[in-house]
Image (tube, rainbow, N blue to C red; front, top):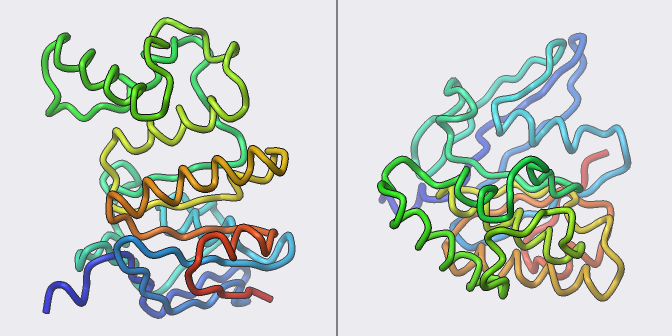
Length: 214
């Protein structure tokens, strides 16, 4: 029955502020599926992501459980949850090269300089940026930055992916391209995805269930 519990489960999740319920959600996002969460600004979408990440701000309280692949991660610190997140901004480290940004995310199990360099080179090839290890992130286009941010997150080997409107700052053509890359990679790796968005086109492209917060 373990297969039934794989993915991201929000069991009786309730987030409150000042005693008033802000978000209430029951959901099971299976590996390779996308759950889109929509709603107006201030309704609690980003707060929901913070609760899943384990970074809920002071003043908010949460009850219920966050489970990942059958494991209760509700009380774990953020770094132990194996949940990746992409934001509206790429947040690449400006003091590191493109290769340095990717190497930062590599797990400790990848040992040795040669092995780490090989993993970074393979990751850049996968996103069409072969040989870009030494480039300054500031020289990348918007789409290239988005792909590097995605690959950096994937190299950390998360078991679930949260998307906090990561496509909203891109123009229409680039938005469709980057959106396809993100969803394709997530499906290929069997990651459950929770997408927060204002844009119905994002939710439609995701192809999964949609929850509206009010």
